[in-house]
Image (cartoon, rainbow, N blue to C red; front, top):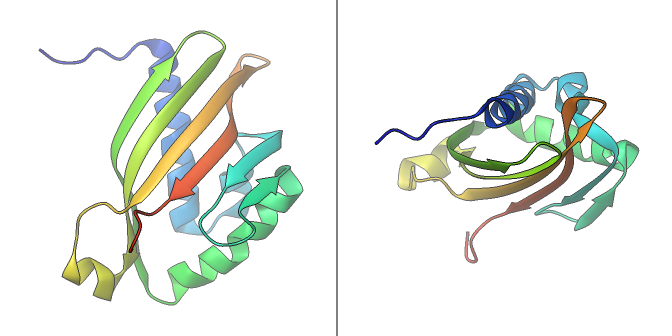
Length: 136
């Protein structure tokens, strides 16, 4: 039986897809567009905890350089959304890595959990947690 997607889930998927597209395009304004000012991110590279939109912005230039210098993919392969009318979370798996890494193993490696809340009628990302399995 197909899984139905309600309007809140659809809107959240659009926000997350727009964010991932902006990451691939190295578009910092697009990456930040749907985040709260007090966003909290737990990231893979240091600093482990990034608090606030200004600090979040500062994490992206090194990642954009990696995308330019050989990272071959940043693709959501699975996205699950749970939402009510005010808060939501999403879990995702992403193919993320260099061409060499993906040639050895093309399975999704990056895990992503996103917490969202509705602000003035729009879904905003309030929390991101990025991780790789141990040994990656």
